[in-house]
Image 1 (cartoon, rainbow, N blue to C red):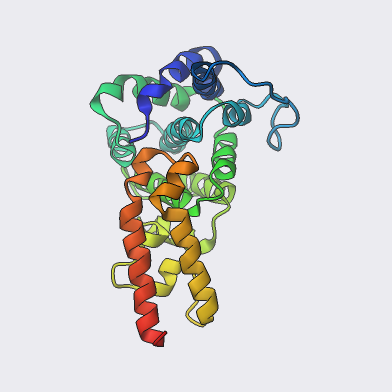
Image 2 (image 1 turned 30 degrees about the horizontal axis):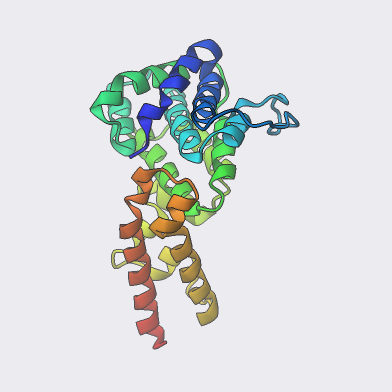
Length: 261
């Protein structure tokens, strides 16, 4: 599961500096645990941000799972708020999608509430999450699908929610297939239960055998549990990797049978 307990320092930082303080607090807490703070350059941050950009500093100082955890809380809270007051169904959807354990509900709830009420922009969090996990598009697709579920928890999607989700989709660097599948409530690999095997691999039906094999190998590398762990993917999402790998292989097997490879 996402190491929510590790975010306690981030929640404390939140009270002093908004959600940016939470990101920095989580990162600095991890750096201190590891025996000191490394020297970093405080150069240009993300486009449109100040040079001292907390989300970027967090990515530099901390672990990616901590950055992931704070970012999904902030994005979820901002999304729930963007179309009006946050309702219980949206909070419950957030807890289900990111599996908040009972012992962490209070502290993560504080982080969620403060992100909801803060005037800070969500865009830097989406951008940093997309940059930090650019080597794992499947994870970003899962996050986008989870955010769609949260947005739909209270009512049909509003224009405000659609626009925010579009901005997150662009910040993640995902394609239109990822958007359409997330909008339908599933990630790319979740479409592999007997439907279009080509869509599972993210390839057109007229792709060459070589291109299809390459897409299969790429998805296997991205979703192998050992590979995910080495790249700092949160344990909760690693737990889903076995199912994804099975679906990817099933799609490739169907294509091989169809093409007699």
